[in-house]
Image (cartoon, rainbow, N blue to C red; front, side, top):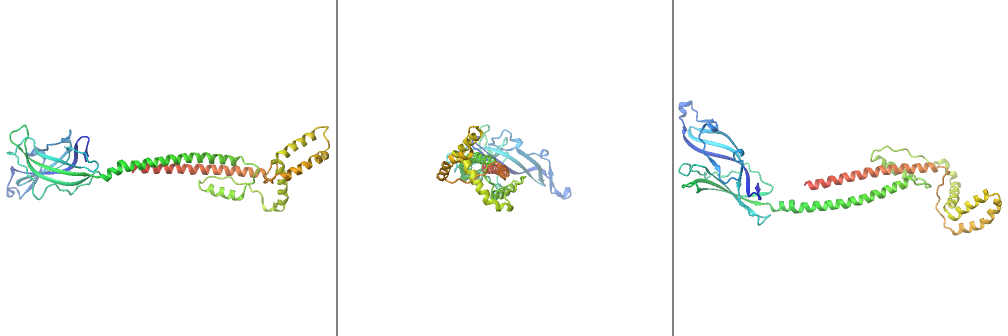
Length: 364
């Protein structure tokens, strides 16, 4: 992991150190054939090898040491797990297609090359057995070299081992995360906003439509509408009021007569001139000086016949007091309630589904 702002590289590694200590040699024959033993880290001498170019303020807290494995020849092995943070000069000029090379410089803090001589076996360097690939960077190359490092504090140089790690940034990762994904999310949010605006307008229109059905009078309730509402009521699992049955088979013989009465009364109610004539007729009947009804009818009947012939035929409408008028009105109100609950359920599901899709896209 690299930190461009702090100019550093963080790495989690397992470090193995080997050295020979002549004070820890013994003859296995004198100790029941014991050729190897394990001792505590604090019970023997350990070289003070550190990461010289460390950039961590808590260096010691990031190192976990184990016990020492000592052989009868004086060969000592120390294994430890360390979280190192080394300083690294990062040049992001070619971002996001840049390559960076960082180093890990290990050497003794107090012992110069005359006292401690570090080396790296030819067949073993940096082993990548447990290496986990980063999602941001790709490991290109690791090289190990021995060098003599001169410190301003001392005359003699120090023996050091330097690991050079070359990393290349995954350009497509940054293009997708920093550019493509935000643009896609912004477009999705814009589409979501437009859809919400359309849904709000549609909700208002459907609310007005259901309110219109609730107060609809004088229009017979069709059986197809009843079946459609019964189907919608099953989807949100809501309790539905029973529709009032009207227009059964026993009344078919009276259908022609009823339709003629509906046409006549409906034409009178829907025609404004005839409506005013009715008012005049009622006022004449209530007046004591009014002429007989036959005279009035003979006076206005020619005009009425002419107006009826001139006006187009109007569709029949039901009027208060007519049989089944109240039943049809109640059926329209039941249908409006069913549609209102269905639209509420539908828009609630749509809002939740669209919100989940937006959050899922933003999470990716």
